[in-house]
Structures are given as C-alpha cells and as structure tokens.
Image 1 (tube, rainbow over the protein chains, first blue to last red):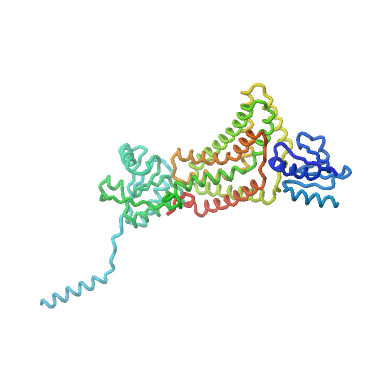
Image 2: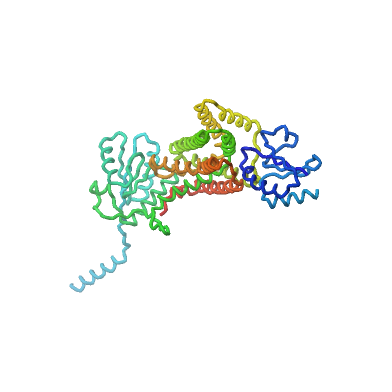
Length: 88
Length: 393
C-alpha cells in the first residue's frame, strides 16, 4: 500500500496536520508515504485531482486510488480510516 | 353674624380642599446651539418645537453660532464649565449633559430621557446659572452610568463598554482567514532567505501595511457614516449589510470542512510568483515596496470577505458622542486585535524557524460567532439603535 499526502505551503491546516501525520507515519513503517505539494508537484498529482480541500490523503493499492480523505483528522481518526480502507 | 361668618369660612375651607390641586411642574431649560444652513440642526429644531408644543414646562433657548459672534463668545464661555465642550452643531445642553448631533430614532429618545431625568432629579443647570435664570446649586446629580465591577470597584460603564466591544469584534474579525493564506505563503518563502533581519523586516512590512489598509478603510467608512449615518435609510442599509454578512459567515460555518479550501488556481499562482519575485529581488528597497504592494492588492480583494464586522463597528462608533481622538483610538484598538493573530503566527514562526498552523476549527467557530454578532447588531440597528450608544440608564 502507498499513501500520498497532498498539502500546500499556504495551507494552515496542512501545517497543523504535520505533527499528526509525523506521528501517524511512525506507526506504519511498512507503508510507503509520499508527500506532494499542490503547487510545486503539479506534474505528479495532475491526474489525481481535483483537489478542493487540503490536506488530502490518497490511498493507493496497485497504483490505483482506493480511498481519499480530506481536511483535518486526529491520529486516532487517521488510524480508523486506514483500518477501514484496508478492508476495501 | 359671627356664627354665619365662621360657617362661611369653614365651608370655603372644606370646599377648597376638594378642588383639584395642580402640582407645579418643574421647568426644564433646553439650550440649543445650532448653525444657519445646517440640515441636521433644522431637523432637531423641528423635533424640539414638537416637544415644546406638547410640554409647556420646557423652555428653549436657541443660539445660532455660525454667524452670530456674540453667541460664539457665549458658547466658548459655557464650554469651559461643561464636562463636554461644544465643538459642533447641533448641540443641545440640558443641565450638564451635552447631546451632540441628531439621529432620528436615536437622539430624540436620548433627549426625552434627559428631560425626564432633569424633571425627576435636582440637576445643575450650568448655563441657567450663568444667565441668572435659575438658582445656583451644588447638585452634582448626573445620569448614573457607573457599574460595580468585582475586584475593580466602581467603573464608568461607558469607559469600559466601547473598548471591550472593539477588542471583541477586532479579535473575532482577526480569525477571518480570508487573507491569512497569503501571510502563510509569504512566511514559508521567507524561510529561504539567509539574512534573518530581512525575513523579519519583510514580514513586518506586510503586516503593517495590512493594518494600515484596514485602518484606512475603517476611517473612510466612519467619515461616510458620520455624514450620512443620521439618515434612517442608511442605518437600515448597514443593518442589511450586517444580515448579509451574517448569512455568509453562518453559511461558511455550516459548509466548510475543517481544512483549507483550494481557491482559484490562477490567482494563487499569480500571488506565488509575485512572492518569489519579491524574495529574490536583489535590491532590498524594491523588495519592501513589492511586499507593500502585495499586501495592499491582496487585502483590497479579501476585504470584501470580512467587510461586515468593520462596517458595523464604525457604525456603532458613529452613534456614540466621541472626539476625533477617541474615534482614532477605538479604531486602532480594533485593528490591533484584528492583526494580533497574524503577528503571533509570524513572530512564533520567525523565532522557531518553523511554521505551525492553527486548526481551522477556530476560524470556523469565529465565522459562527461573527455571524451571530452581526445578526444581533443588525437587529439592534433597526429596532433599538439607542442601545448601541452604550448609555446605560
């Protein structure tokens, strides 16, 4: 499984979520995490849009997006969302 | 004969006891200072005349002070003895109370209140004493606006209510994230600069320009409301702006998810490019100029997003009898608290070399609180504008 976190330099919520994401990522060394910037990594994320709310978390399995979460979440919520996505 | 005389005397005494007694109502002197050609003065004069027709205990003394030099000297003399100087027209003096300006639906009620107060209390008629038409008294009774605040003791209500109002509204307005994203982007890019003093200076210039712009907007709007605010339909229009602002804010609270909404791509990229140009500008003076232009252009557009609260605040200011210095001080207080959260974010970021964001739930809550306040102020503006004069009596 691969997880991409799309954020932006100007996004306060993304800055707020940094700590939460760092903690969450530390719980899952088995998962590949990729961070992308909405404005700086346009080519990388162009086909994955549109992005209406940031941060956006995209879950990939076999290079296909299987789930997408937007906005602020606590670490607990991220864990619950991941647990649910893994059953898909 | 004597018995008949005594009988008539007793009868006359008994009969007069049943005659309706007319208590001698207290006279109240009104001192009206006006200027020839002043429309507001004419409106107040018409109102005062209607009061005189309904109440013959009122005595009006009228002084034209724009052209009459004798009256001009007189107003200077009485101003020295009154707690508030008479500096504009129309001004109405009842006792020691100076009522400046005339707003239909607001000032007329204040005048009636003051007349009622004067009738029911022994007040000092300063001008009457100078003219020799009333007896000199040591009475110092004024309208009671003193409140007892725990730990602080007795405090003049008017002196605390407007500052608290300015802080509250400025603080709530400051949470409005309309232009916040530009500040965050600017700070993120400032981290790439090597010299610390340049980072501090450019950020400070952006914040200061934003504050000055906001103050400028509020001063302009205040001047408009001071000139036209006495017109009822202008006050109603502002109330409608309040309701529209409230609807917008409450809608944002209900529909915005906790996160950053991605706005117009083109605008965002344009601003990103401009910030990069500013940061990489070799001539630092030009970089400062560019930052000022950026702050002005961004805030001009984003101000529409938050126009409700500052417009309402300046309208409330215009309803209160304040000096130019006081208007300026309250607006500075408002803007100070408005910019406070931006300053905190900037300072913390510069000190820690790291930007930590605030959860958007605070901004969402500010939308809700701001919306509710706007609804309440809009309703007061229509139904009870005198309550916005912070005259507790």
